[in-house]
Length: 123
Image 1 (cartoon, rainbow, N blue to C red):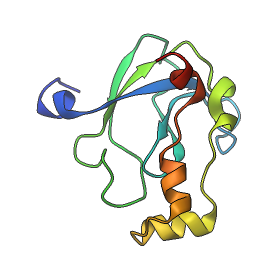
Image 2 (image 1 turned 90 degrees about the horizontal axis):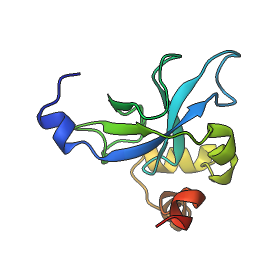
Image 3 (image 1 turned 135 degrees about the vertical axis):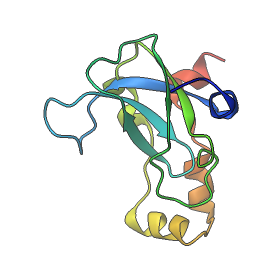
């Protein structure tokens, strides 16, 4: 994607290479933690390597998110997804329904406030 207004306005998220449990065997993505829906989103393909910077549209299914207009830039790290995936609490189906309905419960606030532990440790 050509660099321009969307690139400049897009926030930067860390990407982790790997396969999520929902992905078919053999798949590998640059995965980002979406703080709006508290879920991992996968982007890219087998050619993505640490150090790449990707500009992607958000896969977030929760309306009015912060990545909706400009997507986000993904800086692909050399930290495998398997090292961070299970450290993040993901929403229950009931919490997803609440978020899709525009509700921000205390539980949703806690989910959205999570930081990837190793990023928190290296500030």
